Image (tube, rainbow over all chains, first blue to last red; front, side, top):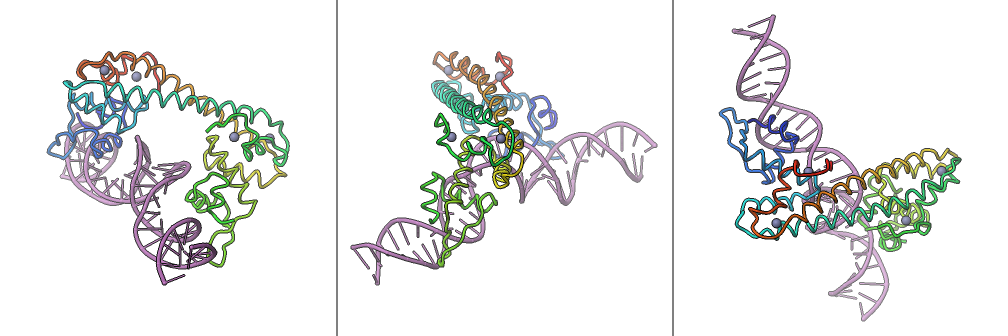
Length: 137
Length: 137
DNA sequence: CTTGACCCTGTAGTTGCTACAGGGTGCATA
DNA sequence: TATGCACCCTGTAGCAACTACAGGGTCAAG
Ligand SMILES: [Zn+2]
Ligand SMILES: [Zn+2]
Ligand SMILES: [Zn+2]
Ligand SMILES: [Zn+2]
């Protein structure tokens, strides 16, 4: 299969596939006589793994480690667990931070009653963190 | 006040201050005879506005518009309200997405019972979105 | 008179892509 | 046979919002 079809069947962008090859996340495939990349099923499932992991928010470096583990099924899987747990914790931390932000922002937005910019409570609130109720960062 | 003191009193990085000046977010300050930047109170409060807005998650372009409004107190403030409301909506959307992610990730992490990478449910789950319960992206 | 803390400019790196520019290939159709 | 079109190639530059140098200048204290 050529790169266009691989892109269609995995939902990845063609440029992204070439990018992954360039950074060594995907192995370089065979080339046809015309120098076109030619992929097989192993490439497809590896790319699916990468895209799915990216959609779940893992970084490229985390995915590199996970792929490495996936390529060595005889190893212990504790590293995979460590990476996934660490990522979950990061997601939870990010949620907590965004919730603090949401609280502050909705308070700020709620204070605007229309009128002139010079009297706007939104602009006032943005200039002075002392008006905030949470640390939010 | 020199740039180091401005950085200390606002919590901003020195490089960041120079960066803001370069992109036109902060006005270029006067220079001393030694070509050092020299800031006053107006610079300090403008930078505080920028940093606080960035901490609240606004983009540089949004902040540019908000500063513009702040510089023209005779205008209507509805644009400020629009920007802040739009940003709040984005934060809420991001929270919703991260919560879906958290759900999926904690399901995935919970499936690992230790052992060999070849049998690991975490690695299996990352390779196949069909095992997911939510669309999560 | 030298040490150290500060300041300057300009450029390149970060993350994870995405978008060209400028070319080559391959198949169908007029 | 020509030619149009979809597809492929490489290499480079751009995005956001910083951050980190390298390689130099300035200034007060000891
Ligand atoms: Zn208002
Ligand atoms: Zn605040
Ligand atoms: Zn496991
Ligand atoms: Zn999934």
